[in-house]
Image (cartoon, rainbow, N blue to C red; front, side, top):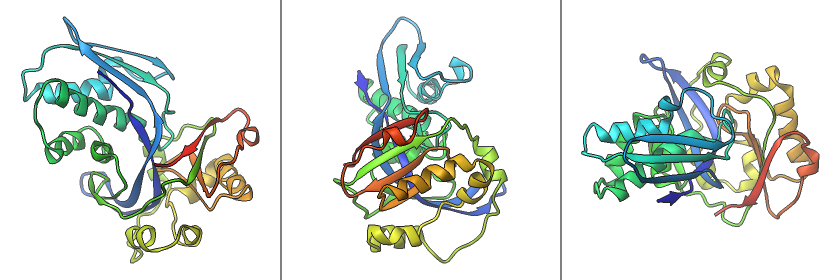
Length: 270
């Protein structure tokens, strides 16, 4: 079976507190973006994983797609499969590409093996694989809380808006990003802003807590955001802990020449 795991952006991101388990409580709005990897899962005599496209660091046996298979294998009698992942969405960008691949693997296996797992059950498996994996099970606008794994539907619609995603040649690990911030409680809930304010008001209302320290360390990322605004973005932000930056526009625009030597993607939002 062939599937196309998409990525996401974060619209606003508040880091609220550090938890006893070492994770952080956050609040954010996840929004799906139709920039996808390609995932193929077919029957096999033995369990196999291969990949192509963008280089995936780390050991193949530790890939999240295999971990998703193994998590289901513990509870169900799954026969072996061959998993091939063609990686397109950049890694270390704050776009959740790896989490999406894992969630999509769960969805495909649920279908192929007729496991009849419902959405809540799939989310429980997904939460063991990564903080934002649960979002990709439904892959619709969500307000994420907890460490990102607790989600509820968000009443936000960017359909027919145009988005540009730019990733400079900078990799920011999650640990590095969290090391640069001070968690703080806030009375401003992201859900209130994205659900009740016009898109044009987001610039003065919605912030990503990672931006301040990341932009100081990597000025190039902040410069990308500023350039998107200069060319007409209604709202622009770094996604997650970076390093990808996005701009939302009312109408299509081609700015690829403005970001040489950077990964660039654009398209209409669903």
